Image (cartoon, rainbow, N blue to C red; front, side, top):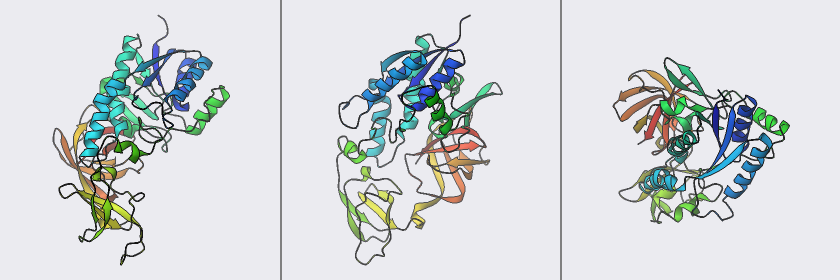
Length: 358
C-alpha cells in the first residue's frame, strides 16, 4: 500500500500553500489543483488569476508536488454566476462564496480529484472536521477570527467525509510563519477579499455590465423623497457608503443607511442612524435549507446563529421548521438582516447548516 493520495485545491494564497506543505510533510502523496473559475475579462487590471497561477507553480516547486490546472468556468457560470445574477436582479444580496464551495470547490473539484485517483481532497479553509456517531461534524476553526465554517455550511456528509482542513487548528500568524520558514514565495501575500470571481475590481462597475440600471426614488419610512437611487440591485441592507446622500435639507446631521427595498414601487427606503429600529430584526425566515450535520435541528431548540459572516454568534431558537423553510427568533435584535445572505446555525462549536434569508 502506497501513501494515500490527496489533491489540494490551491489558489496561490498562503493558506492553501501551507495546507499542501503540511500534508506533504505528514507523508501523504500530494498533488495541487488550480481551479480557473472565471474567464470573462481575465486580462484586466483587477484580475489576478495569472499571478495566482504563477504563485501556485512556485509553491508547488518548493513543496515538491505536481500541479494541475483545471477550468471550471462553464460550471461556474451555470451553477454559481447565473444564480448570483438572478438573486441580485430580484433585489437580494446573495453570498456566492457559499454557493461556490457547495457547487464547485467541493463538487466539481471533488469529482475531478477522485478521477485523478485521490481518496480525499484538502483546502486552505479555516474549519475542522470530526468523525462522530457514524457521521462527520463540521467544526469552527481554532482561530475564531478566521473561522470559515459559515461558508461551508452547504456541504453534505459525503463531501465532508472526503475533505481535510489542515489549517483548522492553526492561527493565521502561525500559517504565515510556517510559510516563511519553509521558503514559500507567497508567505506575505495579502489575502484576497471580496467575491470569489470579482476579485478586487469595483463591484458596482462589475454588476453594471450584467444588471441594467433602473433608477427610482430614495425615500424615508415616512414617505419623504430624499434622493434618487441608480437601481435597487446595486444596494444592500445596512449599506452606508456609496448611497450618495449628503446633507439633506431639514434632516439631522446623521449617517444614512439602506433599510429596505420596495421592489413593487422601485423605491429604496433609507433611514438615519446605525440603531434605527428598521435596521434591527428579532426574527427571520430562511428557505433553501442545507444541513451539513446530516439532519435538521430540532424545532423549538436553542442554538446560536450568524445572519452574516462577520458577526458574533447570537443566541436564537428555531421557532418553526419545515422541510425547506424555517423561522428563527433571536434573543436580541440583529442588525441589518439581509435577504439573500445565509443564516447559519451552530450548536456550540459544531456547524449544523442553514438557509437563505428571505
